[in-house]
Length: 166
Image (cartoon, rainbow, N blue to C red):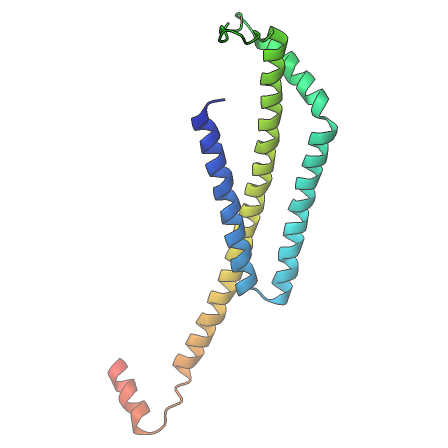
């Protein structure tokens, strides 16, 4: 795996995590107690998915690696590149190289699944926040409309203001 790809994946994972934390903070700051409970349900659902993925990863690691090894062997159309190691270091066997690549694939798949869960949670949080924003905007607009129609100034000031609008 190249360093650029690893760095991009790390950057994207950190970015997704940061976005998720910001959304959680905004939802807690703007929401009502009922919104807080809905937010907790969303978080609990995705946390249980993360936990299930971690448990499946640990439980099925060996079988996933064997499946990845078989996949690598099936897709292999030409010999693996032979890189001569520096003097004094033993040359790795083909089986070792295939196992190492399979383990990297399994680890990357696991990280990709966790990032996908984070992204799904971020999408749900975005929809949730849009609902909060719509409610807040509707409430603010209703208040502004009421204040505009229910002018509370008395006497001459109110009449002068009406003429200015006309």
